[in-house]
Length: 277
Image 1 (cartoon, helix red, strand yellow):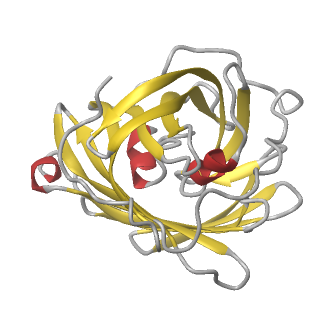
Image 2 (spheres, helix red, strand yellow; image 1 turned 135 degrees about the vertical axis):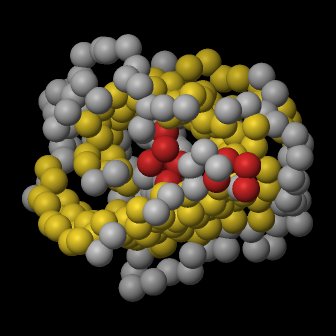
């Protein structure tokens, strides 16, 4: 759930950049246990595409897309791309993509790659997740490359794969969630709970949805925190309907506007309207 879980990506980069949320005790590693195995069957597969409007400053700021790519080297790649529109680019220009290479059985990543440009700054990150609870980061910013070893706890995901892991987990009201997430060249501990189900109205249709409310804190800077909300449909598709976070400019929201998957005639794309609460 960080910045798209956190909203899954470059959005994640934006949503984690804002002022700190109210402080709460950071869960210890002993308290932040592994999330467990995904349910069966997994509610998505190769060919699925999800499309989002991004709203900021009270107006549409850009588009985001999530795609499940064909299997590659035994992994299930999840690609997330984001681009701001002409209006928001006058405030902050962002274009980028991130790909998480997930184990198709556990939905945990073996590798994450991100390539993004924010205004004139070009950032590339390549992360390899190891079984010894470390992640090797190779980061390049405007041509200058550095490396780092980042430590994580009992479970790990990344900003592109996090929402897809949540989609596949059994959820129920009152359930607590805690997981470490790679994002913005750091490991964040993300924790929260499943609130009572809510009715969500979209141009795509009417949904009963799980509402996950959480907080994210950098493991190396525990006072650097962000709040995040994610809504996931309570049906066989487990669609990520919306995510809400905060950047330095204010609230940012991603709202599902369209989805498609091979052989699903009920899936359609819409490009109007906002989430109604």
